[in-house]
Amino acid sequence: MAQSPTQAGAAAPDGPSLADAHAALRADADLQFRFEAATPPRPPGWLDGLLEFLVAISPVLQWVFWGLVAGGAAAIGWLIVREVVKVRLERRAARGESAAAAQPWRPTEEDARALLADADALAAEGRYAEAAHLILLRSIADLRARRPNVVRPALTARDIGRLDALPATARPTFARIAAVVEASRFGGRPVGEAAFADCRRDYEAFALFDGWRA
Picture (spheres, rainbow, N blue to C red):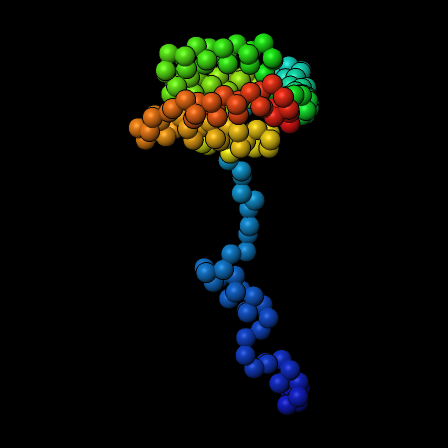
């Protein structure tokens, strides 16, 4: 029996069949159809030993950890306590300086009269410059005894006379004595009896009366 044109076209389609296309695809060497899972590299032997060692000492490591925590807490506590103590000491020192500043500044009457006696003894020998210088030195020594951190070695007598640590009532007197001594020692100006008498009177005014009160 003869086949119809329609049946003949269905039996012989144009182009390669599905099976042929699949076979051609599998035959392509550039394509990979089987994938195998890569085996991870084995860790080095020393790492296994280290892990076993850490597992063995893990109880000790816990104590070490908590020891470090306690040590850090103790260090922080010590720093806090140190700062608190430092602040309290500074406040106490400030209160002590305030209390000292409120006390009378003038020397004792016994010390003042002893100084005047020594100065008079020099003046009696005509050594008026030395007598005036002695009054100035004793006055500076008295100030240094009351304010150890105020009078520095580099300060001149004129600088000391401008210090805020000196009572306002004592500054002019101290400045006048310092001017006489500096003019004598550094300017070569002689100190006569009258100049010494002025220095003595100035010192007596603030040392034996109220000049040294803050």
